[in-house]
Length: 459
View (cartoon, rainbow, N blue to C red):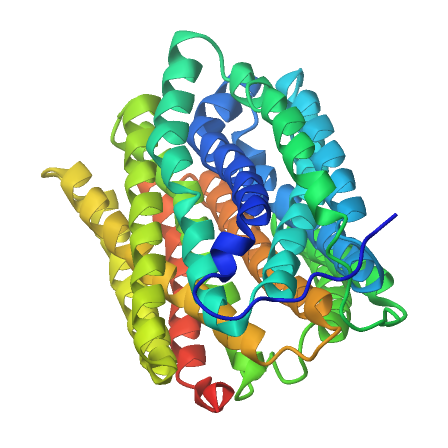
């Protein structure tokens, strides 16, 4: 039976007093980090072996769209009871998805497994964010955001490189199966702790949120399917109603005014989601560029991806230090981080066509991109949490996670559709990848704009 709600402790000793809970949260983040970075690294090899390059973007879009459902379900469960239930369900779905993808005979089965992983991953992300808002005071949340980013350091240093080596020396399937044993450890160390994190204020979940999430996911999927259709009439038949359904679902799940980047919370949520989508979108095609265009191995590709993850942690830690000095610097940090991110991603397009040392350009740009998104993503989270009313931590956490997931799904999905379209038109692979990256970088431009409209959120 759940215990009484854990009241946030004040002062610098909060993290020490909550050390077991902190360890549990960081273990959960580490688990998701290993899976995310490993799959990106082996995706080109996987797609080539199963003959599914045309479905490349769906490996990521399917995961992210399914995450929407897991996010909303977990958010509602978090606002009405203990966090242990959504955590356990998330771990179970995540593990089942890993097993399905690891055993997949075709690309479609891999995507089905990725959908299950998305359901679990969305739940886990929301639960971890809710735990931070529920168990820690505002003065310590910036540091917790830095710690969660740092939980990516070990997976970033080892995950992509090890995944690339395993895929080359053994088989890419082991990349999925190798994560499964971690689930038992994480479950044993976190589920008992999360039983004591009840909502501080009783809340009735708003009606229709699950239906809205389902409408958003299915509508976006229909839209992306239409974009990839071979004929124009079929594309319109699928994409137009899909877009309408997606807009309807998005309006029900996001803060009012997010579509027009409304000042305050809407712009903060949008800036975080768009920045995250820009990094994910470029990362998806970065691995393909390094292996298929420039001929680097999966091991080298994994090492390159790791550099951005490490600099992401550095950016998050930097914003934490600055936040401890003055919360008034949150606005400038948002804008500076988004600008650095834009420069870093732009260098990836330059590397695509570079004939001299493209790897040097890629690494330099990817380090900048990680630094920029680390500052933007973590700072936007802290600003949003400061605006969260008591009893609605789960809903706001879900909105932040959905913003990440939906924009990233669109980023990878539209980029994948552009990649497939360029292939059907007979364009060279560098041009196809460049077209996909150009769309993604456009999303980063919107993120920069959103940061300039988030000022009043710091009041």
